[in-house]
Image (cartoon, rainbow, N blue to C red):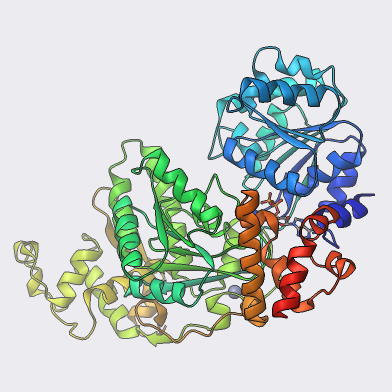
Length: 592
Ligand code: ADP
Ligand code: ZN
């Protein structure tokens, strides 16, 4: 039964890992907690049980815009789903409740605030409910990053509906958050289904922050008509990048908290409806969008934590097609945030933020498989040695021999008796102007002005690298000073060579990762895209709700000639075949 729903309604031929187990588990009325990455296919885990059993599934979701999108999407598949919330008119609200009580709905989407509004939950007892699905369940925990007090009230569900299964779903949860979710929802026995956090279709890459704008423009121009997000740290950068792109003839829109709500919403809608391909945004952008065909995410600036990086890059390639994540990194970003963090008044918060920043910096610095580093960060064991889809694995960075400069740095730290930070050490080695050098008589040291070849920032990179391999430790919060560890000794004595990966400040030639989209008949694909755009405008829905890129790709490869062939295409269920076969078959006939 679940298999046939998967095929006839959603048009997919196989379940993704865990989906089948979760669905069967739910169909035997058991509680569950689902931990899967963005794009892992969580929604299907409750949508199929909703269709496979009698009654209605109640879905709790925190964002009204997302609920509307999900429901619109389900309606395209011929599924009876509705949203119920304060944005509806009195008449619509009445209509939804009537449909619900008459058993006409398969899924009802609600905000937590709506569910706990006076008497609402009690009123549900009169209707046959088959499942409560709680999306973004980490919002229930103060330890999670989006704590939402009204989620706490969801603890009333279990006592009131002891025999109805609860499914809690999230893409981000630590062990502490998992415990909290189970406890708060009164589902201590819930089975935890934890999927891998690997996103195999994402290509991770880090590049030095040099000519960044030019590189971004180049990346965009290489991908005409493909959707992408460019994340920047500040509103100012967002505005300046958007202006430059627009001047260069690229259809880009900005998104940040400084714009009016109306402009922001309009820009987001344009992006969703493929009216603009590029969104330049601060991290305020993303929560409210689940566009499946975002082909690339670029970080203009360093994210502050690995969690942020994972979540933001995770918005690429939800449809499973190859997508790219490029981060532009310079050590200056780390320093900038460090300064900012040091001004935080709460010491605990400060410490936490510094640790997270250090982890993010190490991630950018280590010449190790990006994927392996990410998965290890999320406590996932990996067995591969080469992931084939990150810059380090595909194109291992060259290394340069930094043994001599490392010795100079360590020796300088020793000679100043470990009293100064990285900036002063650099200034001494370079003989830079710095009044404190004379003040402390540091120009008399044998290490003064002994480095002519390398630039300040190159020396800073090596210092950072030596910190990373723990030959240097940083002590002190207000005035951080560099100190030597045991590991410095063999380097100083020349027994241990130091090789620093070159990608930190030199451009290396990059091999292109595989891009699924380039393999097809591009003219036919473009014609199919136009047909999709036309139908989307006619029906006033985002194009991805007509068909995903993956579906168009399958169509341009297989070139179906009739209705039956059309049903075999990935992502084509009966309802969509009935609605759209004619238009697309016609496009194939003309352009194929
Ligand atoms: P999540 O909620 O975990 O972020 P979604 O449920 O939105 O992920 O699924 C991401 C995309 O993958 C959607 O476009 C969905 O239709 C698709 N998908 C889900 N399950 C399957 C499957 N078994 N086969 C093919 N595509 C699937
Ligand atoms: Zn790798």
